[in-house]
Length: 275
Image 1 (cartoon, rainbow, N blue to C red):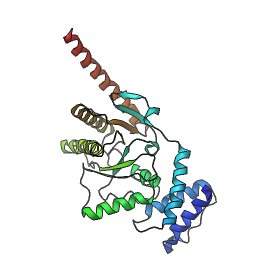
Image 2: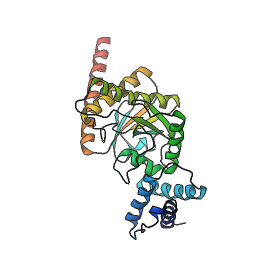
Image 3: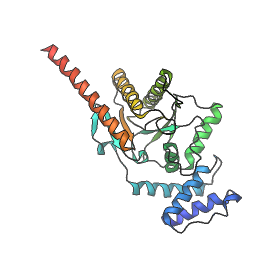
Image 4: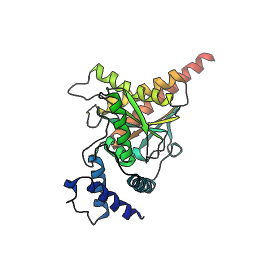
């Protein structure tokens, strides 16, 4: 199959599952057809799917992934000891794991083509990710608590795993509890990655989008939690802070620069004391 044939097959299959969707005309424009496929995938509930669909979907999504370009850690300059800063689409990163800012239902975003990272990750991974998340949640029998983390396979993403965590939702002023819960998200992901013997994790800006955590304060908590964990554990777990917006890149660049400067200053003082 060509990529165009795969796209048409996938749309037809998803439409055939629901009589209400059969009346939707398939657009002639390639971009519009891709948007329709993503929308149909987004709204699809976690239910059994055919082997043929999965084979075609996987071939389609993997080729789309290759077209976007895969980014490895070797392509990103260090921003500090064991820390990288990269601006771009997290679904392009080939780290051992990427972090998904999920909601408490843990099934991905059902809003067609929504701009959240949950939607982007599930769209690029394919329907298998929602099916695995559904199995986890059926077994758990309760919503995912804020600050905890779950691990799944990555399916058609270039990473190996996805770490799903639910950040705090902010209503009004940020409380100490909110700050601690956000820190818990980062630590839970790091501990889960270590338990699975992973070597690299890419974090998104947890809670700063739809959950309204102030970006600068969230970045301070993220950096401090990661650096504290790395110091405490002295392991080789490398961390990528992935940002999408220019404003977040500026915040992280400034904070990492100041943290790097403080670390260098402390190191210099220690060396001076030895002399």
